[in-house]
Length: 471
Length: 74
Image (cartoon, rainbow over all chains, first blue to last red; front, side, top):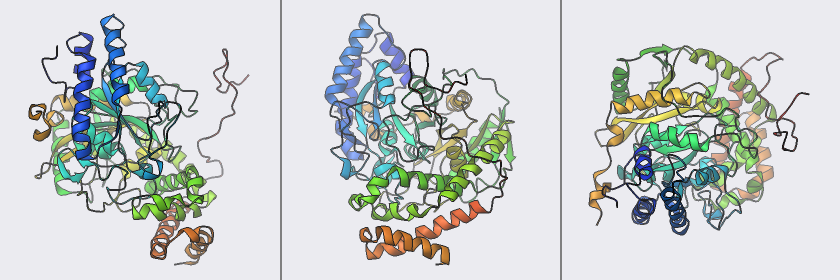
């Protein structure tokens, strides 16, 4: 029944072929389960392969589709979920930490429930940095699964904290995955794994059932092979949820046909202190974009963007993990810096945290105004390509590097999509991000999709992972 | 360490010192210095009395068939 391998096929194409009964959800699922078992341990990208559940859901999807009950573009398509999303049925949810390796929940996170209703098939719980990197980790091995590896070079890191979500999609182990971002955790793996990742507007996707790191910064979003796929997935997982008071009433319907101003902004000095090859690829991307867009340097108000985001993240995580901290459980974490990370942040004064929240309100109004003249702000997704798995990295969350776009986007809950825009001389992928105003996912997805239709970066996959190498 | 950093370190040390190993103390002092540096950057921003944070609280009512559970100003 299956004449062409589903591996590295887009969600849109897979969905079309499943709908037209050209390929079978059961066969597709078996193909991906085999790859999860084979490559998951090699890349440290998988915590649990949910074989029994996946085959059960695949058979149900197949029966429904054969009897004419087609549910939509994700029906019959396998996916993986970052291991901070609660799953029922005895499937562990480890939060990436050895301490929680036997943790189970008797309910599903809302995003898991929504995907089940869409007919998507949960094939794996994917690896992540312990406690979503919230304790201040500085090394890729800070995970129950070991350092998660980039599909493009096993000696390089997949990025974090949604490491397995990025690596599994980039390795062709699942067609798409769900990740989470507090500050950089979707965009960083998208960059390092050479795939597309969407950080939705805060509140667009219910956080119910996701490990809380920082209530006012945490977002859930898709990682996939293209921005177009991210749009299809977001439509299925977004929406108001009574179980998450911060979830938005604004409905999202994916629509690429979005009016534009044909103008992109780039924050002045955002290219300072970045890797030469990252800069070179970004400039090539800008030159391409200039055929359609006017690109203007933007001066933003002089505000302590990174300090605001960092203070909010540290203070909220200190409260979210109060019980964990008071019991001294950090001693059981993998990374040495995570074992003492929770303590210093308990000294943040309430008035400083609230000041950060007040400045955030000022930032929101001013940046909203600054962005009004543009379709999106653009920048390199990351300042550097993937770093070696044995090296400490310089992260913005700990203050070791600069990430103004990330600080603004996450503090203000703005959507951003990262897509691949080239490779370094060592064949490591680089990315470009398009950040929009709140609830303007359609606009940035539309621009990113057009960019991808005119480039081939997202269609390139590591040779050793192509399906022809399958035995 | 300046005085503010010292006071905060003493607070952390008093509360959590029994969990902290000797070689971690310098790292915790560095982290506190970063936190104080962040706080000073925030304190330099002048805000008028009327600038308030986006609300993180809304009154709760049980969702019913006719009430979504969200705020309705009746």
